[in-house]
Length: 98
Image (cartoon, one colour):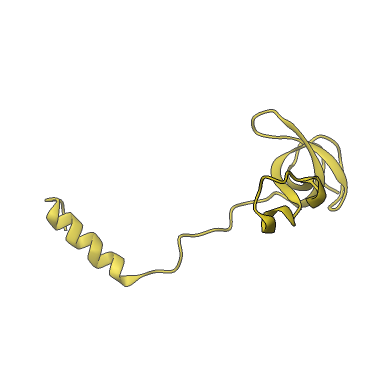
């Protein structure tokens, strides 16, 4: 059970593909317009339930809960040794510490 007030991520289809405007590229027009957003759950619920959330800016959004307590999982990639050398060269050129 996910309790009211917990931070969640929801998903919703904003427009079905057939509802989209004709003024977009053909491959885009074939896809639904989807939304993923995060917010504070307004009522107790379970993963998969249709819910309402309040976003960080106070907007109310509706969708299906896909995750509780979401967090960022991206990174800037793996370690690249050349970056250390670039850093040293830049510091030297700029007159900074080595």
